[in-house]
Length: 213
Length: 213
Image (cartoon, rainbow over all chains, first blue to last red; front, side, top):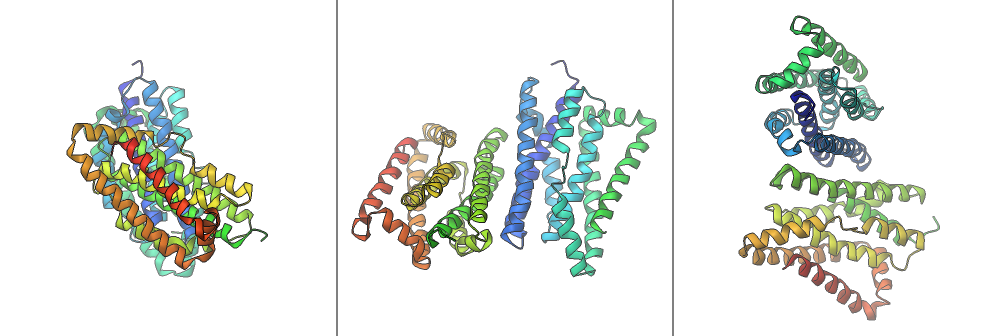
């Protein structure tokens, strides 16, 4: 394999992130959606995550890596993230999709920034939103308008999502130094890692504002 | 609407059957698959079911029907079918996919036989297997080879699936006479409905033989 070891790590964690997001969003859609139309709208996002998983897995195979082996180090951390952020209702599910996936995507995109353009391009392709999650923004804003007390509860929920995401990311980085290294390089070296976190925070604040939170 | 009322009923039950099968197969894949590769293989089938749901929903909209209204009379029966046939392990999940979906598909295909060719064509399109479930057949055969006692248990499981399917189908037919009428017409009139059941039984026997059961 001519790629740096961090590439297989990044594609592996991202592939399992997409596979597990697909399963969880499908479940949230089936159990929490208030109508069949809402269920279909969230399922549509879930199926798109699956298509992204397929692209990442195929690229791993092209690189000569075993997709199962590349994903398996990340299964426990990502399942823990989902178990600790199981939405209790439809609006929480939508905030999780928009805010939780958003911050995770920012991480992956930053980690891919300094990689070979074909890898960075693939990562951008699977992470681009293309307005797909716009329906989540609209439903959450409408939900808060209908019940203003929901806003404060959802803002708390969003903070919890970010806290859990950072906690899982730290554990993954400690266990997989190759992956952590990509982020450090993306940040322009250890000294400048604060820039990276400033950027993640900025993007997160934009999403919270979009939701009206 | 120029179509007979049975058409909206048929597309409605089929659309919800695909939407619920997608969710259940996704869950079975995430919770029962013995490897990430197996999980991906069953998820691939699940995502195809979702694509079929999308085609059926779009056709309902084209016919001027409200998809949610068309599906909702069938939600309870199909959820009851899934609740009563929750697989306990990976091989049961695969047999459910192959045998359970198989008999359901035979029903829908028969019901569509005498409809307008554009409807019958759509139903054929979403029901055609194209070898997608071949992986289920291979895994089940390998599972029985590795553990011959599994065969007898899976044969019992398949009989239970058929029994539950017939029981749910009867309840749906009693509640939705338009749909039952399509089946009677497909059978060449009430007197000849036994031909229809003979055909369903024959197809089911072929699937059981393919599985080695």
